[in-house]
Length: 272
Ligand SMILES: [Fe+2]
Image (tube, rainbow, N blue to C red):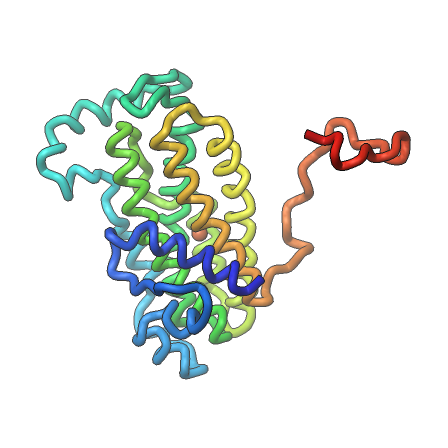
């Protein structure tokens, strides 16, 4: 089970290898933990005393990475000047692209993933230094690193599909960041993991719904990537031991709960 978990996380890193300086492994079989984090991280995690030299949460909240990929690709700049305006006016409209029709849910997925990075990156970076437990620090550092890579992907996809992205954490996210920053010791770990676990639990079904329904091949590919990231983050958060079941959202409603017991289960051979 653990090997599957680690392979899943590494798959996320592999997909973005060309975009990041993250070190990758060549096998899921062994030694992943030692290679998953860079040498600097291993050294930092060896000490059990958190560092508080600076506050990434403050830094990133004030200076997020730009969402305009044209900044890194001057050849696309002129085209994007008008494309962003078009995208902003899409509303519920289904717009044709070279990758297929792009609907509101497709665009919303890009926005939600970008929005997740706007708070998870600074919180993860802050938690890497301030969390009380070494596992929390290591996993939050890894989540931040992966979100930096995912952010590059979502900005690239959004540029291609002419979808404007947000630049600032939402009011709720800013409230959570203040709440987390105000804690220390184990209370810091507990509230940071709780808030991040809740947020991941909300975006996870959104990704699955778009992955299942989209007619846009670029969005489908992106949703597959995003699902791998979020799946890995859920597992890393749960492995900290600070996920509180009482703080999880209620289970989804079942319109017509199965009655059960009315009919015997058919033989497996009859279920095609
Ligand atoms: Fe995440």
